[in-house]
Image (tube, rainbow, N blue to C red):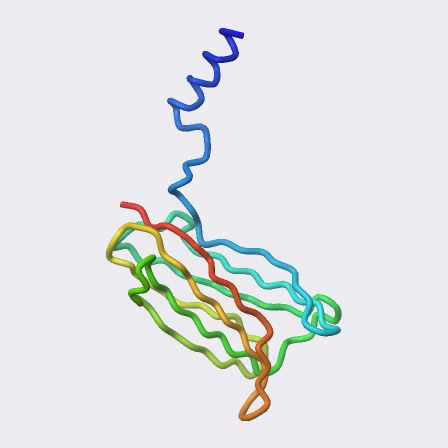
Length: 140
């Protein structure tokens, strides 16, 4: 028992356990909207985000059932901190299934929320197909 306790203490002290303060901005999620089945992927490069250093956010959405390009996709993105201060807002309309890609720099370390909404359609016939608030951190 003493040996097992020693191993656990050694693992904790060397940082081999996930740091709860390090949260990457990554997502792979399947979801249904009516009869349609989608996959949304959010990723960053680099994966470890650092204050004052640019990173690229990439968002892709695919219809899993038929693998066709999704027509008239709108990406609305917003980054805010825990107090609600907004640091970044952007939108993109894609006629033929283009992914969202944007370079972003956050100057301060801390916890942030990436608010993502994906719509489909144009004009008065716009349908909200995906909403998610992704929590992530920016380090030094």
